[in-house]
Amino acid sequence: MLKVGIFGVGHLGKFHLNNWKDIRDTELVGFYDPNDDIAQQVTEKYQLARFLDAESLMNACDAVDIVTPTPFHFELCKMAIRKGKNVFVEKPLAHTMDEERELVKLAKESNIKFQVGHVERFNPAFLAVQQTDLKPMFIEVHRLAEFNPRGTEVSVILDLMIHDIDIILSIVNSDVKNISASGVAVMTDTPDIANVRIEFNNGCVANLTSSRISMKKMRKMRLFQKDAYIGIDFLNKKTEIIKLKTPQDVDAFSFDLDTPHGKKTIAIANPLIPEVNAIKMELEKFRDAIVNNTPTIVSEVDGFRAMDVAHQILQKIKNNSLTS
Ligand SMILES: NC(=O)c1ccc[n+]([C@@H]2O[C@H](COP(=O)([O-])OP(=O)(O)OC[C@H]3O[C@@H](n4cnc5c(N)ncnc54)[C@H](O)[C@@H]3O)[C@@H](O)[C@H]2O)c1
Image 1 (cartoon, rainbow, N blue to C red):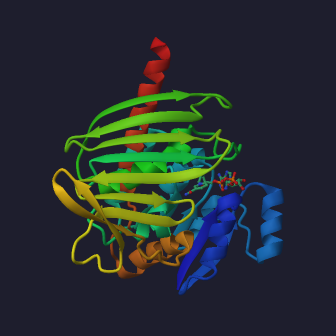
Image 2: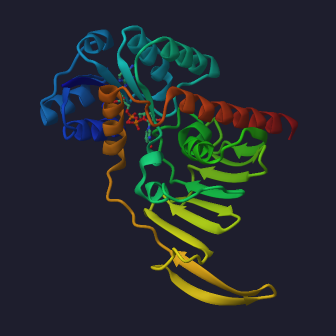
């Protein structure tokens, strides 16, 4: 039985708590949250033990699930690794590159499993393209959200765009060559809306727009590659693949187009979307990695790479605002 403790039972922590209860061979030993009102609600509603300090909860468990605001991730992760506890930490991994570097180093020197909460990797719309050969040369992303004060202790890059950066780095098998970025702080003192262009050494270009001050929600990624267009709608959990028809595409809707290069048959497929609860799946995979001693799906190195790109973006935005 894997003993798990949750740190932070605010908005997202409660979802984690509910999911842990349904994950086999795990025991939720308790939670730590300094907010008395929230703690009281959780104790009453879930009959879960409240620990009054982080260290005693860590001592009582094998794995920690850190769902606090980002500025607290580093100290809690560090304490957990030093105690030999497996760590699941919400995204973004930490607040500064120095903190992230130290966490990667500490995790590498330890025997623990470390996973970062890039939950979009488990979004059914993204899981639906796991069997598709993704080799995008152009990526267009829109992640738009209505304003919500939660999460605004960090910029929109670390709050929202980080999801897309992580997904793109997991797809594009090449190093980043160049980044251009522009962003504006409207409602907070860090960028609330941003547009970013990432160029990779293999020629792929990703164009990302993120906003947390939008009137409507959107979470779409469009991938263009030599033989196909792949549309992934993370919000509505739909995926569409439009491509030149091959003999394997028997079930796809298709139509013919006359082109100067002859008749082409286009196939439109909607891959089967798995019925998956993304949060439950990411926590289950973390548990499996501990129990089976296998690598985690989103490791501390993945979290670090995404943050490295995010910090370069923030630096570009800062440089732009100094010159404008
Ligand atoms: N993966 C995702 O899609 C996603 C979505 C939302 C939030 N998040 C991340 O989850 C984290 C929490 O976000 P939220 O929206 O639940 O925030 P929240 O403000 O609703 O909840 C945070 C909770 O942590 C508690 N807390 C503060 N300091 C603490 C400490 N030192 N130790 C333990 N608990 C502490 C607070 O009292 C609060 O109850 C953030 O890092 C955020 O970036 C991820």
